[in-house]
Amino acid sequence: MATVSLHEALEALRQEITQTPIDSEAAAEAFRIRFLGQRSGQLTHLFKRLRELPPEERPLLGGQLNALKRLAEQRLEEARLRLRPTPTGSAEIPDLTLPGRRMFTGSLHPLTQTLEAIVRVFEQLGFAVVEGPEIEDDWHNFSALNFPPDHPARDMQDTFFLHQGASYAEAVVLRTHTSPVQIRVMERMQPPIRIIAPGRVYRNEAVSYKSFCLFHQVEGLYVDQNVSMGDLKQTLHLFAQALFGKDVRMRFRPSYFPFTEPSAEVDIWWPLPDHPEGGRWMEILGCGMVHPNVFRAVGIDPERYTGYAFGMGVERIAMLRYGIDDIRLFYENDVRFLEQF
Image 1 (spheres, rainbow, N blue to C red):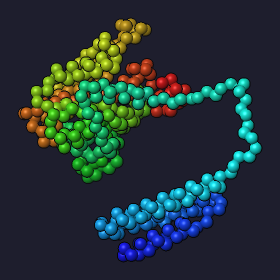
Image 2: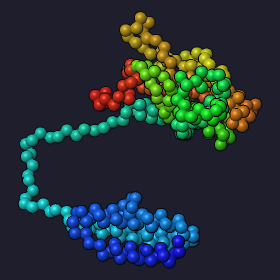
Image 3: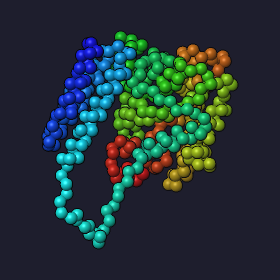
Image 4: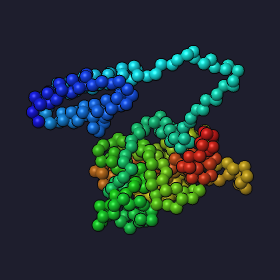
């Protein structure tokens, strides 16, 4: 499209904008659609045509188009002010004896409050916050995290597959954890790395009072030289004290995760007055030292670097903090429940 034709179109459009009458509300709306409409507006169409021009000519014509847009918006605003009906008669005096109206204020969802509290603690410990996609490929969600091909997590009964393909390498899934974010970070960064990855994850589980098909996780990763299990325990102990109080009691139990070795689960002692033993141990997260195979998958030398990783469910911690015994309450959007927070 020649530049001169676009110049001519701009001049013709300027005349139309200036001379088009706006004498009613219907005419004002027609004017808006004709010149400023997002789909069929003439200005919108000309903005799209800018890409047809050589790069060196675009700034000049783009400036002229913006000036035309401001002219159209100004005419429309002036017309609407002119057409707005003016109140007649004296304003009604309010009855000052009537009771005041209650102002209802909103509040953050309990999951949001808990997530922000968790993130705030780890930010104070020097962790950066990183996010990633909720739709993942097999490599980032499973293979790079040392999941063997026959691992139960790859089964359709445990994972939502958006596309299975002819092999595992072609599979596309709703992520089952936020660990893929750790893989993406290690692929593009060299140690030292200290990050947390909050986000929503999905599991193909039956919905009940203790499980749901989606939930929120916060996973952490620290990679550097000479990182030890002692560093991990100290970090998690500081986290538990910040979230549950200075007198919190913790324990680490041996466990198994494909992407960490050794692995552990962390419990805290939860007092329960009606419990025969005065309380019970409640699991809050899993953790461990990053498996060498995970480092090899992302090109980090496991002979030089070590690291730890941990992951926790936000819903589980929120249920402990607020005494909630049914995870489904978080997703029912019942105002009677939410206004308590």
